[in-house]
Length: 489
Image (cartoon, rainbow, N blue to C red):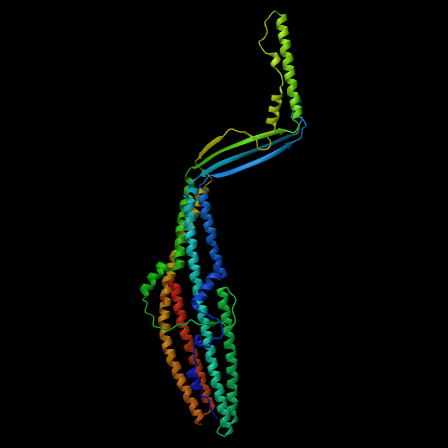
């Protein structure tokens, strides 16, 4: 009978999940980060702030341009007279009327002149906050990517231990058949296999859970059997703390975003103080009016009657003058006639509705106003803007102090993590050697299965600590990169 050695299985096992057999689509770390930046809902909400800030900037520039408006209206009035103080007014005909105008106005003040600068500062702060959000998202995805690899490495280790436990069970059964071992060793080996199967099941489940969390951060559905392929070598960190602090103070996105907000708040103070400046308002406009009678014949008849009465009065006046021995008045009474040309002109002038308007006079106005007292409202706005600027300065200072502490702590943790990896790798090698020795002693009958079980438990603990140390090192490196605000490898 050929017996498989658990020590041989352990030596052949690959502890890193990145080296596991590929059976599905692959996902590198950079691809994961790109997908997260493009699809993560929280980050996309941050990006929408750019459109709002850009719109505010365009609006602030537009406030410096004239406002142009136009209006058009029409009206119908029934042909019924109105009475006022016993007098009758209005036309007996239905009346159609229309009016329209175009107005141009421009309002300039200190606040409107400062608005583009304030909006531009807010846009720059928004861009800095988007960069900060992207860097934070990148750090989160890297940490979760490492967590998935760590879970996969633990699952591979459990698979290896299961292979070894099954080999030991075969060996215990073979020894029992030839009388070199008792049934108690066989039962212990069966229990060890069962426990290892449970541990493997839980480890594989944890891998799937961590993958789901990774794709949740990425904002995309998880494809089946996806494989994470990016490898992270453990190398001794060579970056100096002073260099890291300098890079962080110059390039940390979160610190830069707070500095941008501080500059925007400083502009806000100047904008609030501009309320003491005078404001200028300019306006001009042109308009027109048209009116049309629905029944022009009545108006024509009335005008014709006026002409007839005027001609009759003219002849009467001349007759009276001649009877008094006076000469004629010199008026051409025969020429006072309502001609067809006058009728045609009245009809043409009446056909003005709705667009043949009579232009109103053009108007121009300019107003210069200087605020003197508004119940201390300006002072309150200035105090509020000044307090906001002071708060922004405090936030920048707070972030600078936190950044120094975070970078220093991350650097210390990274150095410690690298040394921990070296020690845990040595411990894992020693535990692996001890397990191989215990297996060999059990195979030749020099010890009981209890010693093998204890050696396996020691190795599992040592190998778990080694895996945790390796990925603890990578996570410490990612934490340092997040604190500095840039990649370091």
